Image 1 (cartoon, rainbow, N blue to C red):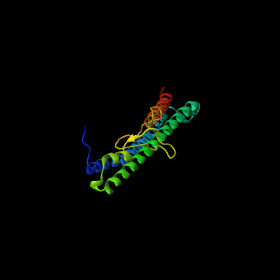
Image 2: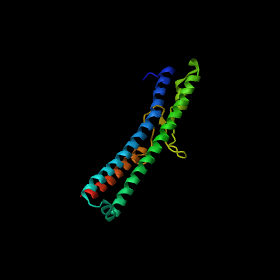
Image 3: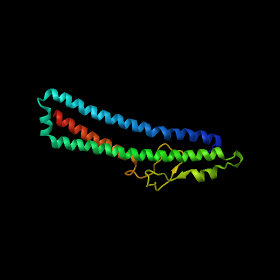
Image 4: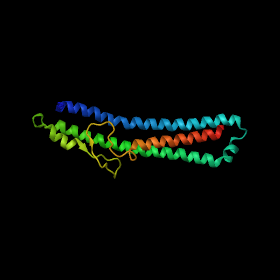
Length: 181
């Protein structure tokens, strides 16, 4: 049987995990804005390159307006999916961080001689997390976990982000193909 951590070891573990749940959503959001800037830059550079080859780029785009509109909407839908997934991602990590902070507070307040790991784990060990203001996960997650989400594959926030990336790639490739072929 594995030895249970002491109260102090639990506090150290929980502080590290809390810091992860504080910084990780911000890091992911920064990458989202980098990708948005990269997409816009790629499309603008493609238009500048094509402008030197086509005598009137404005007429070329207007002649293919349905295609450019379709792929532009595809890119916007992709970013909307990513934004939705990021919203859930941030909400889940925020809820997990609050849960860890309340567990740390309990560990700090409880007297060492009164600390019982089983009681602590029953109260904080498995909780259903919120992934939006109104929705809560149907199954509980562990107290210490990097990605605290137990929903099925389709409803998982990472699947929304991945689907958004695929939709954006389809839109960008479609725009570039229309421009250069």
